[in-house]
Structures are given as structure tokens and as C-alpha cells.
Length: 299
Image (cartoon, rainbow, N blue to C red; front, side, top):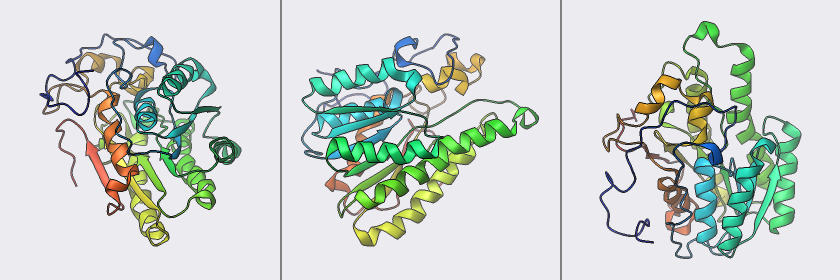
């Protein structure tokens, strides 16, 4: 595994500069059908025991960033409960297989995070199957591009906030009774929180809300020994982009505006989540760690 996260490499050329063809998948999209395929660290991520014995719940863990985080957590020694939509079962089964091949346990808990009852039962099922809970990664998100606010209807606005913001609140609230000092919560925000695209008004608004939620909650929970932080990805190649997350004409140019000149791969996000979950970041509280290939978000 020469292309792993521990070796000295040129970041410009570590992964291919992809030019994705125009393509379309029904929401929420599958990694299995994505062209080109993503790199989630299946062959490259090397663990060093940084999360040994941890019990983690990861939402949106079937594909893209969530899948890469799940694989990295397993390689670092954690058992993982994977939350995902039922339509994503094919991808989830593959990630479960990779986790178990890495010597850790994987538990599949499908459902829709827009359903308040599922958010509660998800946490209870994860705690029961894992034998406890030490880490929560709120990663699942919904992104649908709409060019004009006149075409952005109430139903989409509400569905995006339900999936991206209300779900984080509900899952976090349900998880708190099970979290003890040393536990961590990591939320996925986005560069869109700082530099919103005109066609992602609702999505960008939710990501700004997640930043604010993260910083406020971190102050509340830090005295209890529970750290809350966030990761803000830039343009990362995932099924989210082709299931109406981007205008189709924009796909061939996706990520080429960054300083590195290419889109990121999900596995390039995973070390940020590992760091914020590990004891190495014990003095990091309320931080949003930008992983964006040299895009320039406004602080």
C-alpha cells in the first residue's frame, strides 16, 4: 500500500485529476454506480491504533465521506454502527464487509434521519449493539442544486433542514445520556458555510447552522469532558454530486478551481475525523477543520 496517508507524497498528484462525465443518479445515489469510482481508503488507509476500543456511530456511513470515515475508524481500532438510507443497502453492505475484514465489528442500522423516531431508535440500537458509545460522527447530508430561489420550494427547504440540521440535534440529544468524559462528537459542515454557491442556498444555510451549533454545543459540553468539533470539506467526489447535488454541466469541472487543481477523494477527509476523535486532539474544542484542497473560505 504505497499510496497511504503516512507516506511522503505530492498532494497534487496523490490522486487523479478527474474529469467526471455528465451523469445522473436518483437521490441519494450509490458509490457502486459512480463514474469514476471514489477512493474511500479501502486499499490505502493504514491504522496506528489511535481509536483502539472506541465505539462509534457514523451517519451517512454507506458511501462517500462517511464510508471513508467508517473504514478509517475501523482500521484505527474502532467498532462502528453505520446509519444510512435503506436505498443505500448495497453500498452499506460493502463498507460492512471492509470493516469486518479489518478485524472490527460493523452494525447496519438503516433508516431516514428526517424521521425523529428513527434518530432516537438509531442511537439506542447503536448503544445496544456496540455495548456503549464513545464517538458520534454526524455526517449524513442532503444537497440538491436549484438555480433560482423562485424554484426552491418549501418542501425542499424543509427536507434539507430536516436531514442536515434537525437530525444532528436529535441524534446528539439522544446520544448524550450515553457519552462519558473523553467522548467526542464530530459534525460534517462544508466550505459552503463560508463561500455559498448560488445554486445551493438551502444546503449552504444548513452548513452555516451546523458550524454555529458545533461551536455553541462545544462550550456547553466541554466542562463535561465531551468534545465537539466539525470538519468542513471542500469539493469531494461522492455520489452526492451526481444525485442532483451539482448542475450536470458542472460535473466535468468539479474541483478544478482549487489550489491543488483537482477534486478531493473521501479518504483524504478521514484523517481529520480520526484526529478530532482521538485523544491527540484533547485540547481542540469547537474547531472547524477545513479540508478543501486550498479553496479560500472566509473565516
